[in-house]
Length: 327
Image (cartoon, rainbow, N blue to C red; front, side, top):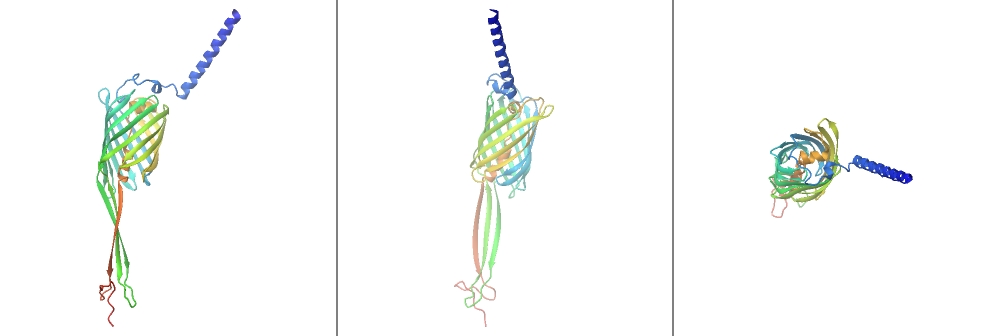
């Protein structure tokens, strides 16, 4: 009997050690996370967990043009499950200044999702000023490490144009025929005509760890479609602050493509991982993509006209030649 008890005791200790090792490795790998394992009804908190903000300097290429700037947001809790956020962005796009301001008003349960109203206005100092405004419904749904988020609504803007004129001159000829000269004028017109139409921006996110997220999504802006791809990785920065590096890309119709990246600096009242900041603090900033609503609305046209002429004192004759010089 004593040998039997020793074998049982040894077996129990072995499985206990294996179990403890497995749990330790799982926790280290980030699999056991209160943000990834809670059910949608297991967590409830305010829409915004205290006043917080973030700043995002970035740069890259957008629609075959250079872009550089910075955007940021300020999130403020209201009563209980309601909150607001104000976004802003400034920078240079294709050597011209741009600016954006946007607002979110929303209900949120951090363990379940978000539902709200979003509005945005973007100005680009091109051709005297091109702009686009957006009004949309905003939503997010949280399921473990998965997040489905997006905005969908109506966008509209103005028409801004620029015309370039090129003139070529072929002088009158000589000889027995005396052909007339020709003045040709060609006009090239570029128009950003932002029409009233449906738009959307949608992401499906997966948090590989509590501080690393990757996503894919869809954009329909300015009447064109694109695939959105991106990733963000966060790391400790300072007490109650967090920093991250991010990259985003677009692959779509026409010039609906680009890649840009930068840093994000999160400022809040508490230390928390990236997944918690995204679900408890600040909704997504959507402003950079609104420039596509303008450039995707570009139309080019050209026209040309030619006028024959003769050098005085010779005059143009009905057959298109110049009058013979007097002898």
